[in-house]
Image 1 (cartoon, rainbow, N blue to C red):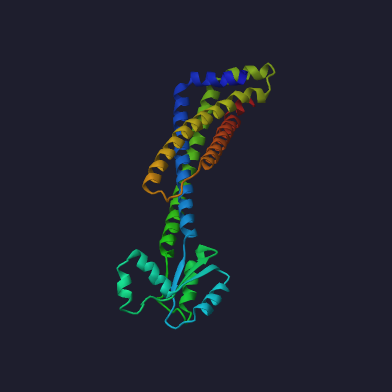
Image 2 (cartoon, rainbow, N blue to C red):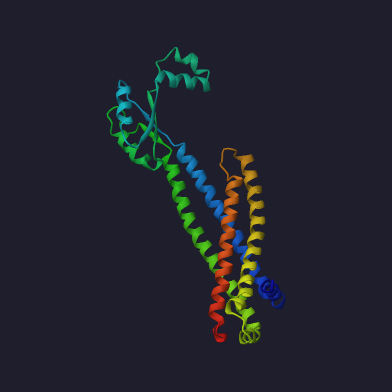
Length: 288
């Protein structure tokens, strides 16, 4: 109780510094939390696109569809191969455009037999697409896939992740040194009192504990405020996006809980370690 009372008294003794640190930490944790959720959600979206990615290969007239399917199935990259015959393709097209049913009686079916290929690893799409064009039953120009769009998204996400990680690192460093500065001011204001306490037999751990609690309280309060704001903001934006684009995956309540716990752990580490390092650095004159 003594350590907690001393930590709270330190807030009253230098409120400007404590408020500045609290504000810095709150802004930093809010940005860190929201940027982390954004990256996590983008990962989910790209992963969802990759899972739906298929290669479509059009067979040449007269090609042996079954033999081609068996050959493609033997490739280690391939998970599934599905054949859509030209008659099935025409029937599907007529479902979308009923007026084509009349024209089909007048002309020969121009559609080719089609193979839909799903891979074990979507990252191998381009490689498998090149292999397909080398098959005599398919040939160049008869392979289509959405891999180019997905690859651009993956590259964009990689660049965004790098920039976000740099921002997160700068925010953590800024918060860390802000905590250290506040604890240093508390030490300077109480240096003479600390010397007296040591002279009368107080242990170094007893003397240091109020400063550790002060740093811990600063970052914990900031993290709780950031989590309240961040969760509300994310749920609001995610709800709007779900109404506009219901197919987009969003983070679940369990995901938000895990992210919140992660931020609390980080806040505890920054507050405690920043205060401990400041104590070790700035109390040497009192031999703590």
